Length: 496
Image (cartoon, rainbow, N blue to C red; front, side, top):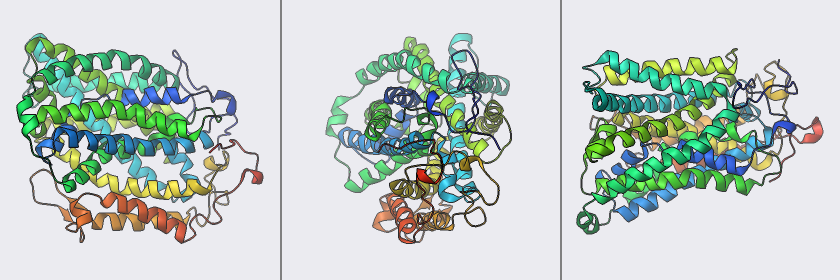
C-alpha cells in the first residue's frame, strides 16, 4: 500500500506529475480559488455550449431571455455544486472518487466510481468526435479535402489521432501544467470566441428574436435540467480532483463561488449565443455536425479563426476530463502509474470517436440521451456524498488507500451499506421519473412516473438528489462512519 506521506512530484511546467490518488501533503497544497476559476473557465469555453443553447429555443420554445435565465440557473447553479465537492478536496487532499471510499466503503465505492468513469469517457468521446469534425473542416478549407467523415476514413482517423495526441501531452504532464495551460490558453481561445461571437450576433434576425412568444415555465424547468446535466452535473465527481491542491486555509465559500463563476460566465455566454442564433434559424439545434452548422453561419474568411477557437476550446475541456478520468481509473484499483492511466482512457475514447464518425449516423442525439441517463446515478452520488460532508470534517489519508479487510473504511465486507443502499434507492426512484429516448426514435425506456408533472418537466434529478441525501441521513447511513481527527493523526484540518 502506498504511503501518502511519501514525497511525490506534483509536476512542473516541464516535468510529469508523479502523484496518483495519494493525498497531497500540506507543504504541496498552495492552490488558490483563482486557480480553480481559470481551470473551470477554460474547461467550459467549448463550442458544445452553442448547440445546448440552440435546443432551448428550437426544441423547448423559449425566448432568448428565458434561455439566459435557464443558463444561469442550470450552468452556474450546477457548478456551484461542483464547488461544494471541491470543499471535500480541500479537506482530504485527494480526488473526489477516492474520498468517496470513506463514504461508501472501499468496495461499495466501485459502483459510483465506475459510473463516474463512464461519464468522463462519454464526454471525452463527444469532445474527440467534435474536435475531429473541426479538423476535417479545417483540412477542407486549407487543402480542399472532402469534409465528409465516412467518405474519407483515413483523414478522419488522422484528425482523431491529432486531437488525442494533444490531449495526452497536456493531461499526461499533470496538475501544474494543466493549471498553467488553462489560465493562459483561456485568454487566447476566449478572445477568438468573442471575435466569432460578434459575427454570429451581427447576423441575428432581431425582429424574429423580439417577436418570439415566451415558452411555458415547464419548458424552462426541462431546460434547466438539460443544461445542468450537460454541464455541472457531468463534472461534479471531478470537483475535488483539482481542488485537492488548494490551501487548507481557503474558505469554502471562495471555492463555491470560484467554480460557479469560472464555469458559469463562459457557459451563460455560449448557451445564450446558441439560443440567440437558433431563434431565427433552427439549423444549429438539428445539425448532425454542429461544427459545420456554425461554420456555415459565418463569412468564409471567418472560418479559420472559428475552427481554431473551436479546436482549442474542446482541447481545454478534454485534457481536464482525461486527467480526472485517469484518477478515477486508479481509484477503481487499476495498478498503473497515472500517466499510463491517461493512455488507457484515451484509447477507449479514440475507438468511440471512430465509431460515431465512421459507423453511426450521428452523435448529438445519443449525446443528449447519454448525459440525461448518467445524470441520475451521478446526482444520486452527489446526494449521498454531500449529506456525508455535512457531518464529516476529515478523511484518513492512510485508510483511503487501504483496500485490505479490517481497514477504517472497510466497514462490513468492504461496503458501507447505508450509503450504497441510499444510492441505489435514489437511482431506482430517479429512473421512475425518466424517459429514455434517442432523437425522434421510440423511447427505449419509460419510467412509471415519467408522465407526471415531475417527470414531464425534467426535474426528476432533483427528486433523485433529495431521496439519496434523505435516505442516507434518515437510515443512519452516516452514523458510525464519520470520524474525527482525534482518532488518528489528521492529514487535513477542515475550515468550513
